Amino acid sequence: MPQDAAFREITVADAAARSAGGAAGAGGDVPGERMFLNMGPSHPATHGVLRLRLELDGDIVARCDPVIGHLHRGMEKAAENCTYTQFIPHTDRLDYLAPLCNNIAFALAVERLAGLEVPPRCAAIRVLCCELARLSSHLLGLGVYGMDTGAWTTFMYAFTAREKLHTLFEELTGARFTASFARIGGVARDLPDGWLARVLRLCDELPATIADLDRLLTRNKIFLDRTKDIAVIGRERALALGLTGANLRASGVAFDLRKDRPYSGYEQYDFDIPVGTVGDCYDRYLVRMEELRQSLRIVRQAARRMPGGPWRAEEARDIVPPPKERVLTRMEELIQNFAIATRGPQIPAGEVWFEAENPKGALGFFIHSRGGGVPWRLRVHGGSFTALSTLPEIVPGHFITDIPAILGSLDFVMGECDR
Image 1: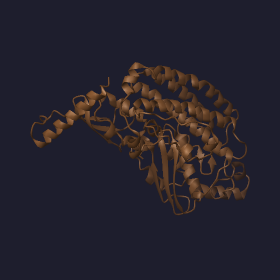
Image 2: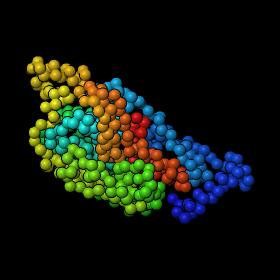
Image 3: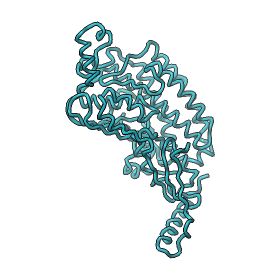
Image 4: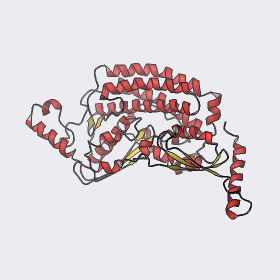
């Protein structure tokens, strides 16, 4: 159980004083009293291949150094050897719990560099996909968070609902997990017949699951003791540390890229931005719970208002391939398709920085183009990376048993850190 805040302050101050005394060689700890412990990279509580180097004073963490890089794949360098279209499947492997969001964020970055506008139907499909992916990501994150704090039932409820979402993803994209659905200038295909009706039917079912999670956790005494006043990040520190997404909003900063820098027509949708007051593990949980409800609002609006018309910018002949039926029947379209497939979409020279509001926080792409179908330089910045950077500051002073609750509250994924 977490200790009282006042007792914790005294303990940490006492540990720091004894450490300083030992360094001075007078009255310090005897050699070997401090313990150094590796937590991970193969540990279920670290949510992936994350290693924490811990310095312990008894059960209290005196120092925490996160060690990343165990999953590094050179993704940014690989992008410089792929066409823009070929890099889309790589984005699935960033936040692999919400691959549709990554696909769309990358496509939006390239389109902004090319000055390309997509049709209204394409923008609405993208919003719908992003919010369904947010629901999937948050359901898994909250279900696993219940397990991190000792509640197995929440995971079963959340994972059952998430599987229903993945069935919809499979119907739309052909894959349950790594969708690779976005394209530069559009999406891979139009919506299947009857798919929107099935989305709306799921929207009627999910509130019951969210209510079950709420009843299981929000007022649960054990869960409250494990999360309230643990790993507090105040408003000023959250801004200074560069937090984004739900972690930033839990600290009292009402910033959401969908509202403050809208893209894909998000300004047309009615939804609220949940904000915390304390910035502890409990607030981070509450913000994500409310984001589930707000994403459902957006999904309903997008499905009911889905415009007709084209689902890709067909007039961009050097960027968007022609329809398949024309490729198979006309020589000009066959040549155009061959050129785009082999050389890549022809993007003008320039630089762009674009970031989207993803479930784990802001996912940003910096692209430097010298023209042609391959980026000259590409860099990725994810919200999970900045979330992990807070650990050396927020973990010390807590028990070892608090670490799973702290890590789960930050809701990071290592694919977005080790790029």
